[in-house]
Image (cartoon, rainbow, N blue to C red):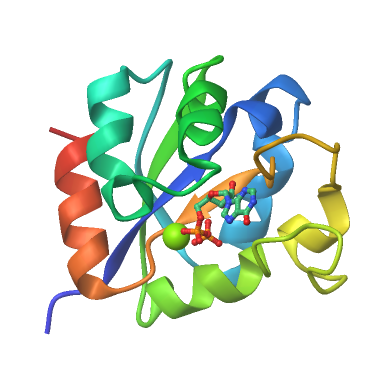
Length: 138
Ligand code: IDP
Ligand code: MG
């Protein structure tokens, strides 16, 4: 069976705060493999496709604007059960209540904005991972 892969994004807040290295170090320390990596400011079309499930929600437009606000680091990460494993490393969506020990719990906070700036994205299922990796690494 082929090794599972997931898409990790270091969001613009993580890049701007200089946390890319710490986040990548946690992925490597866990034992996962960084297969490919790119740094760029994403276009709205990529983000609209990436976040299509959230269209119409109150935080949708702030989310797109935030993700377009600067460079992101997109990472193709591989390992057995890496999709579930990275979600566990990332922690809960809300950084205020994300468990200590997780990326969001240790390094993130609520800045009182319309969108939660929570440092990272990780695919949430094999179907999402396949779709998102094709989108970000086409
Ligand atoms: P996830 O990143 O933990 O999978 P999703 O529900 O897929 O969370 O939401 C995508 C992103 O949208 C989150 O990471 C966060 O940046 C933002 N977000 C999600 N829910 C809210 C909310 O209720 N208020 C503000 N921002 C949110
Ligand atoms: Mg999600």
